[in-house]
Image (cartoon, rainbow, N blue to C red; front, side):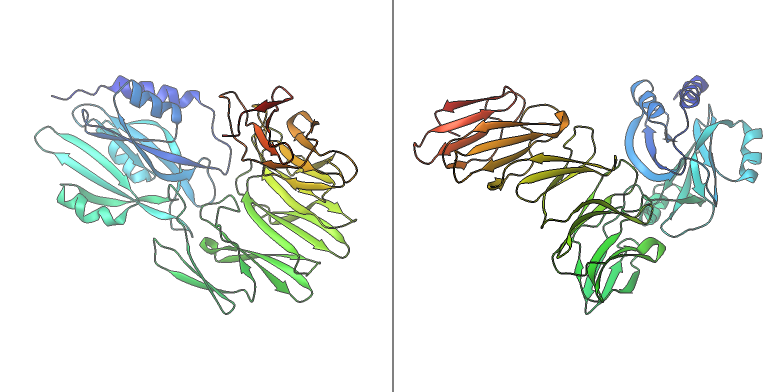
Length: 439
């Protein structure tokens, strides 16, 4: 006969209680695990309990069944976890007080709360269906939870009985929306529900990448276009049937909408909007999670171009680098601060960001060819707030940056056009060496 004793649940409960609660108003994954020995499905939001169940008690990890609220918000109820040992050996989850009144006298013991689920449907949530399986020969009872309605017939055929909707939850991952743009109308289709909604957006351009822009479940779609003498950026939140509009005074064609990027480690990615106009240039960040636009950097003496959006500081969050050709400006949205690095007035090329020194943070490499002096290469190491200069001397062809010696950091290899020699910049050691080739 199978054995599953109550101390298993006690150990998991102790691990659960030892952890501090997640941050308020955040979604957390609800993990699903299964034990073929105990014929038991176990659900938890606690990564530590998940690890204990796998390593100590032999449960198999079956991924994330859904996402739930980590703290109580309006419309939610605690998703309580209850356990009963032999012969049922069952984990049971409910938000309903009448069910608690029924199972507790029968021997189920409260172990904790596995997040909070909605008691009624709110936009963007899905039903969490509960099924039960009874083995009359062994008196074993199991409960199973899923958001996948298509499994209903399969579960019934396998001896499971449909119980009820345990609550409403967010999907484990946000589905990619179907998007069509035609004659000023944007049609967004949810592939799971099959429902479509139309949005009158006018003429413009659709940002090809959709993502979570507001920190809540579901992907948003971004669109930009003219709005009279202004430029508009629209963020369409189809799950809430909402459109957020951001207007920019410079309604000119020389504008670039980029993203999405994580610029501040807060849920919801940001959009980057660069405007070049007669009155100068401006770099904006659109943070739809707070429904704000922020001018991160302004430049009055010409046009700017995007160098890259990457982790230049080595802090695990993206910064934005722009250039006017003679200077590179690196701006941090998280810190609301910008740094400048002079590279020269005859910059020939600025390469895509790369890790050239093997230390956290990407470097910016510029190839500068002054008219009256020799060419040189400038490496901007923003993590160190420093730049390094390497003399090139003559015109050169640069090869793709990559690791050529097995040591940390990518080497910068180039061929001098006049001599035909191959040379390699080893930035982690700050020297240039002649090499047989740039293979």
